[in-house]
Image (tube, rainbow, N blue to C red; front, side):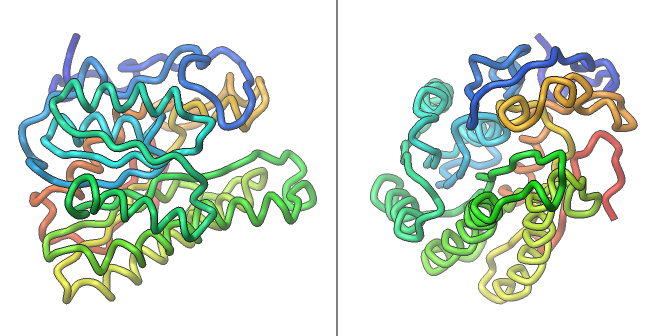
Length: 296
């Protein structure tokens, strides 16, 4: 099995053909076919985050799981925030973290509640002794083929609360505890620059995350806290069959120049870079991991 340092053809590194499938939201990793690659058998760490204390929201599966595995193998302890119905996925992620010899703290709950966001940060302080890196990765999306007219007020509210309010609340809770050298990493999306009509509300929040990242980076620069964003393209996670119809799933990612969807494992190195001292002179930036779809 090759690791993330082995040079490969990016067009064939992972399968392009995904079978059409659907499942109930929020989806489970074990029900996805093929199961996403989170780097379980490929990511090799080198101590780049030794003794770092990280909070990762949406840490149970998908990109969050890949980041947790990579962070642990780089030497970090992690707090995983996730929805209660994602408990099994969260426990599986925690197992990988612990197999790397690091601490995993599980904090189930809904980030649409401000008090719960504060609790997540409090748990990091209680269990790990502080927060060095905050990864705002949790998100909600639901495809609406009718576009604007198909988006209910309830859905719009859920998308904004999950994707924007939670990020704001978590940052407010974590920043006073962060020392110089700490980092905040927000997950935006190619949707911030190339919005799909069927994801209008989701795309709106992802554009907001880019703007929030840039503004907060200026606010916190004098404190020595860096703020950056990773902008994924189409990435194969349980969220895809849980929010799209079978035909859309079967075509997912094929529109990219590389001709396939990305895997969560291909995102993890970007988060490690932003979390590590290697990016000490980088703040307010967006790193697009999109399979060649242009982000400008």
